[in-house]
Length: 85
Image (cartoon, rainbow, N blue to C red; front, side):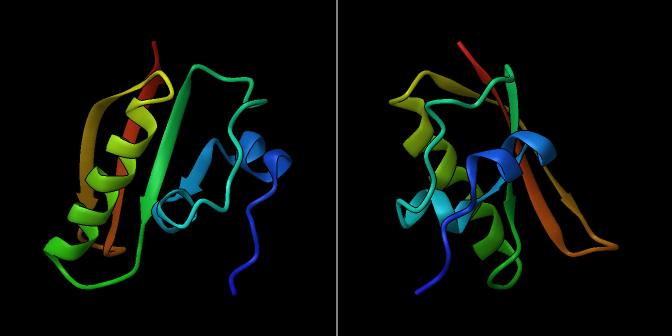
């Protein structure tokens, strides 16, 4: 089983993995910032985008909204940027 991402690590990097959200391994209740990025790096191609969007939808029920999503071809990473409502 994967290790939960610590609240301190998430706050410091302002990033959480999509997997942590989808597997319910992260707690954002004490997250101090208004903006957050979701990193999706597992899977191939469209799977990463799908995973990032699915994680963003999970966070919608907790007051977050998707601002934008970007795929960085050079690093093969997908980031979704969210803001707290």
